[in-house]
Image (cartoon, rainbow, N blue to C red; front, side, top):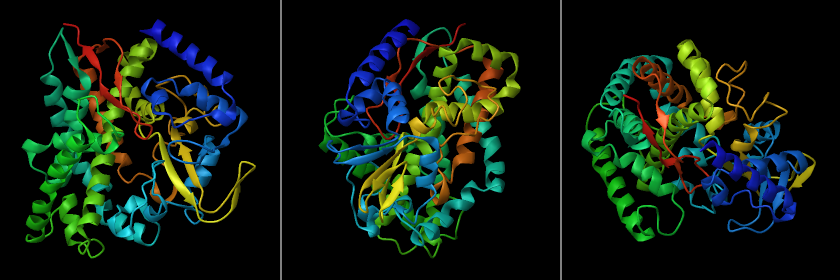
Length: 419
């Protein structure tokens, strides 16, 4: 597998450095699906760190690829807007009325009011209550894994843990929990027939069926005293209790995608990284205390959210380029997390890195991920429980990556636990 990787990267580097900069398409799904994105962003960081793509399937857009410039954009919501009516937070042209938007695609003050509604779920006291539950579930998932036979780690471990946690956070019907990460996959799937052979219409029917479950849950929670679950928080708080159905669904979709994908793909990506770097795996086995330090390194390495989009509200200079009001600006977190000027030896996976939290995966400013500590806690517990049980989990063959330039993740990854 390592030889194939090296050959693929060499070919990608050759192509990236032979392509004129004005022909660059950093949002091409194929470079994400093939994990060949790295030399393209490396060249942009070196030669054109604030780069304008004039023609693409997404229209014109600026690519911000340096660590410091990403922080500058993400921290300046007064100039760089997330407003859904201007296009929202992804490279796709997703303009929609604010009344149909989740809070991540709003600017202050509406963003701040709605974010505060669900923030208590991710406060330290709440996480302290959740920790033993996560550990119990992680242990049960791992104890049921087969030995000495190939299975899909994404399905058996990553999806299962995150679907259980989402169901708990929302008090969602347990038997339907797997529909939650499935909803995230549907939302992030580009147009066309997907890997399961389903068409756009098939997926539209499926997502409506999943979201339809939340109508009854809203009505049920509204008629009960406030509880400590995300749906109850949304329907009882003054900032969100009068939401339109579209606003409610928007926030549910946000919570499902955010609650599923960071943890799910980082669990898988961490195991892959350790297999690709066996000396680091040996280091971890010799000293399990390194888990605490390894978790942010996994999140940096995987960069599960590849990009976020902003729209310029006024003309501004960034990195020596003039960005005009109304233009689309893409912060490539995957690139900022490999920036040589900000991170020492960024192309190496180092579990005892001195400053592992020097990544941009969770964003900055008012939109910094509200559930970041929960994501880190799930990853930490999962690895603590893995090391208690298995000397090693071996990746078998090439993982199957998502066809997405927004979430950098996995559809499947075959592994084997030696007997």
